[in-house]
Image (tube, rainbow, N blue to C red; front, side, top):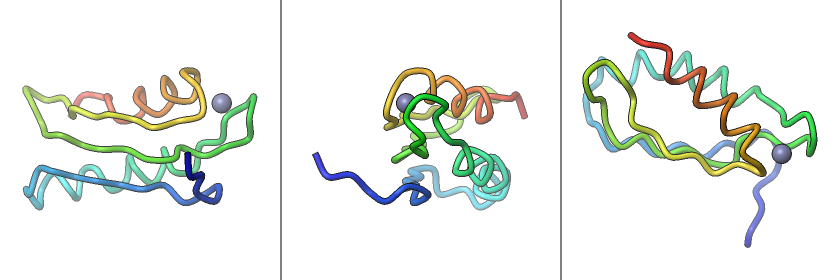
Length: 79
Ligand SMILES: [Zn+2]
């Protein structure tokens, strides 16, 4: 497994909507600043599959579930 340097969060967004990208940008900036309390790592990667009924459908790559929970809770704040 290849590890990216801390602080480099890979972002993949499948939904082409520009409006959603603007909404996402601020949230993703906040998730990119998260650091795991246990491992000191940032979020490695996130894939946004779409936007459904007010929720972003996301898949996270993180060092552990605790960091994933923090990141997804920021993203899942209802629009
Ligand atoms: Zn961790």
